[in-house]
Image 1 (tube, helix red, strand yellow):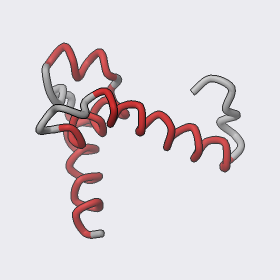
Image 2 (cartoon, one colour):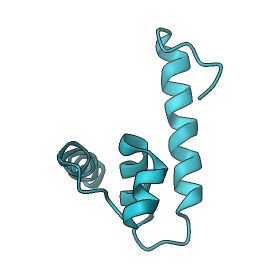
Image 3 (cartoon, one colour):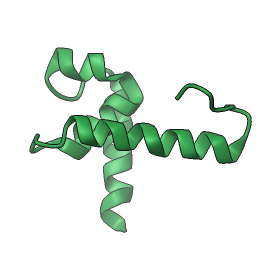
Image 4 (cartoon, helix red, strand yellow):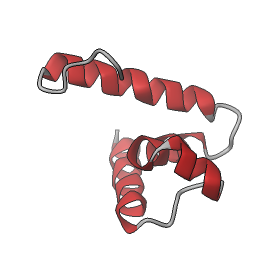
Length: 74
């Protein structure tokens, strides 16, 4: 997000959390809300919207699966 210093860990974490919150709100009414938000965090919301889901980018597919696996462990 604008205004955050990427070299400052606190600002970086705060900005990332705020961005993920925005993405979760964007996909709020979607049954795949979390997966789409995580994919958008990685590949950008335009790519998620273009493919109406997780874009077929190997890096993004792997990222989403890794994040979801970790989230489900909690």
